[in-house]
Length: 460
Image (cartoon, rainbow, N blue to C red; front, side):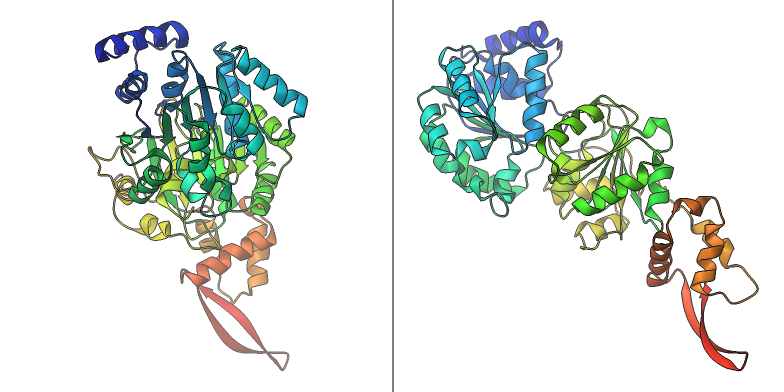
């Protein structure tokens, strides 16, 4: 099958009959058609999150004579993909760590008998010599690398096994390699072609703009209050909050659990616990998940309405990847960036503090240009968010006498809004306002009972 018209007609028929999809997006049709042509070409497909990339390898796998091997960076993505294949009655197997020798042997037995033709795995398994020897005896029609940007970014840092990918592909000799990612800048694309795909690899790139995601920035004084305010309407949940550390993830999840059904997710949890949380969060539309970047890639939850970055990531690629968890069903969703709220400064701080369109600035950092007007961001909509608690704190400072910090906190703690906060959280907000010079602190020497002491005086 090499005639492009025949291919596209056949693909459309199978998409409708097997997947219930009556219309393929242009990039889906282009990628699938290219994979099914007799000319075997490696490919890098750069599609926005929610762009329907899974169909681009699920559908072709039904046509290939040989095996389709799909490589994921995270266990959660492997489990998620297995659920999709199972829901479509497409036999597949997951080859992962922790399997017994008997379980691995059973998988290869099914591969040999062609009871399954789709193998889901990760690089740690593919790098094992025994696994490579077993797989090299099969004809591999398609090798899929999902979240392919991690091959470069993680291979250079904490997952050095990714640096062996080139050697692994030489050993397995797949007929085609297709790498998928939602975010790949020029340097990542160059390295993927050099190290894995080959210089002649076809690059298919869709626009990174997700028009249904509205971008907001928040400069929080009392971050917990802002999260509660953002999420208190049911229409803003299900929600994901990204943090920079496991410890912070656990702390924030605990604090929010008094207000919403909240789950905590990070790579330090036991595998069984992570799977349980994934499944529970998937089935609970009104819930909130506080997570590190471990939940940031590929997990397909169509009805996530809000993504909050409690801490900003280090680059636009990660921000677009993680904020893109929202609105995968195409409905209006919201991404909130908390600025000036990280222990490690992010290069994105200046972007979100600036006066240029947030959407255009993020797309530009990825080496692309906006083809249409902004569909929604705080800058273009001239929407300035007022942090929660600031008005109440201003009123508390309008008093005819000098106040100490302790007496100010005591006064705030009497207000219903601040009863939700600990003393440390209120202290954090006051220190931030002083640091940013929204509150000016002066020291004054007073006499009282013939003793001299210093009081804190606050002015807004």
